[in-house]
Amino acid sequence: MLLRILSIALLVLAAAFAQPPGRGAGAPDWRPRLVGAEPGVQGPVVKGAPFSADLVSETTQTLADGNHIRQTSRSHLYRDAEGRTRREQSLDALGVLAPNTNLPPVVFINDPVAHVNYALRPSARTATRSAGRSFGRNGGPAQKKDDSAAGPGRRMRSPQAAPAGQNIKTEALGRQTIEGVPTEGTRTTISISAGQMGNEQAIQVVTEAWYSPDLQTVVLFKRSDPRSGETVTRYININRTEPAHTLFEVPADYKITDANGRGGTSPAK
Amino acid sequence: MTCVEFWNQTPDGGLEASPGSGHLAECAACGARWDRQQALRAGLKQLSAAMRAEEAPPRVEAGLLAAFRVQAGFDRRRGTSVSWVHSWWAPSLTWASAAAATVALAVVLMHGLHPVPASIAPLSAPHRIASPAVESASVPADQVDEDAYGPDSDFIPVPNATRIEPNEDLNVVRVETTRSAMMALGIPVDAANAADTVLADVVLGSDGMARAVRLVPNGDGSLLEE
Image (tube, rainbow over all chains, first blue to last red; front, top):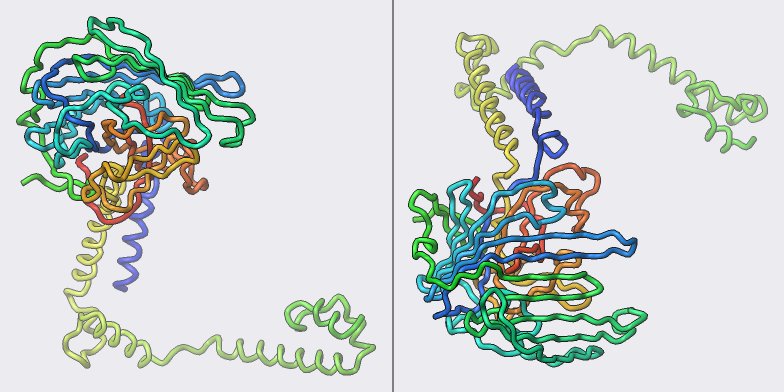
């Protein structure tokens, strides 16, 4: 009797909840959604060069049938004199992962002074905190080296020998002022010889980077790769005044959780 | 028709009529075997009819119920009579148990309606990304804090995405999307339920473009804030 009653109760409930109305990917109102965010690794810290700007990245991929895939990503970047950065990132370039969906923006704060990073979700008033991690572990300023293949925010690639079958040619493009900032241009052409990757003909990957010594970053970056398409990333509306300190802090009413060693979150202490 | 062919074509092991019954007139051995099986069939039918009215002795049912109560911990006094089941508080206990199970199931199911499962892998930035054939999108291991990221990252570069530069800022967002979206990115998922939702961690480059993605595996880990 006991088992019978329990079984009936469980079956009735299971049936009631088996088809929840309006939920699931098959429901008409279902949309992809943002569930969480976490700061990852950060580039070298740049001190003494504060600025703020909009960062726009556009990619165009041409398919074999003549079709095109275009994606645009926008973010707003702040950097103070101490090297803290705040990136207000839209999520409109996730492509097939979130088509026709307006995911709420996220904010990533990197504070190398306090050695802590945050990922903020303003829509949920929550933040995920993790220990500061950056490629430049010593926190020293970035150095300008072979930056021809690095885009905005992608500072400095170490000089590397060209892989076998590839021919790399670098040429200076002179100087020009972009968005009110003096820059130096470099074009790099990478030629992948025929047969290197099954290609019948040689493939040329051309990148053009305009580097600002004042900001210590690339403010205009173009890349043309027949495999992945065209990419143009640029800073616009550059403002070189010191951003407000509060921009690099988590608002007091945010609920903060700590990321664990592998990136999971736990309530902040 | 051979004997083997006859028995292979005879359904139900020879207890039903055979399409090749002409063989029985030609083969004495098969005929005798057929007669024995028909006799056995008739005997089984007779036995079944005779036992249809039989029931288990009352003591068997009582014994089973008593054993169940002892095993379930309801009866701490061995040897209690079967009438214990019908005492005044037995129905109360039954319905209380049912209610508790109902509430528990409701909690589980209600939680299940939220797309974030209670047991998911923690969101984590990649320490290493699976390498494509050419121009690897991997982050150099010697430049990444291995202790922070652990050894089991399983991010896959987004097709045709710009490669990750060694010093590039990388951040991660977790989104709920569909299996079909993951399939479109080349992530191996079960195509049988393409419309189901899954959780995916997406690595964003410094330009905000998706660089790599992984299907969030089930496993231990804390729940991200909702």
